[in-house]
Length: 291
Image 1 (cartoon, one colour):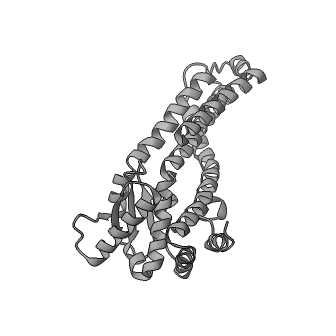
Image 2 (cartoon, rainbow, N blue to C red; image 1 turned 135 degrees about the horizontal axis):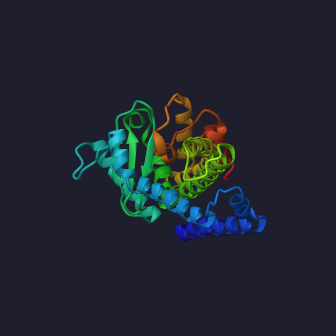
Image 3 (tube, helix red, strand yellow; image 1 turned 30 degrees about the horizontal axis):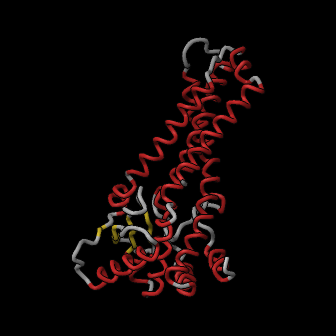
């Protein structure tokens, strides 16, 4: 249902923009300038490009995480008591959350962090850092795992991929329109695409992509509150609050790379607009108030 709703939203937005362009006579205006750009066809092409890139990234997310973070998946039978405890904890929470048992892994990092990823909530990957295991007690680790398991149960990986796909669609669409307009009206290119088209399109994609990331990060921050609430439900509110306070104590922790930052327990950014996670004090306050 989540996938259907996002795809339907994407199609609906495309239709609305197409109608608006027709009513405003934008297509005719562009044609009059010699641009001859088929906006309806461009919308479809943009959607294919935007969605395809996002879903390829999602499909490769587990493999990418293992390679970039050096995640060592715990094999059966577990070799240590810690591995045995982690597998038992994840199995218990997976049953509570009503999802399939994910792969469980550990990656080398001095910072306390964890993330979940994967295309299917019944075949996900949950990984924790060695720093988290060393710097948090069992109750706090349980809460962190609960946070990540909630991401999996809520289908947040798929939702974020769909959100990013929609954003990619319109970034590519408007960047292409800008490139065509500048190439035809400013540089007076009459046939084909001149160098200005490609240069302006790339610059516009970068600029629009940065602006669009504000929307994606806002959505990511809202997800974190829900994941904290889910972690509190699986492990207990006090344990979840204690885990967030432990993160506060070691807040020098670095962000996870790339898209993994959006699925971790700890994240940040240069400013609040570009942060994948809300400030820890806000997350703690939300739990304390029962929101």
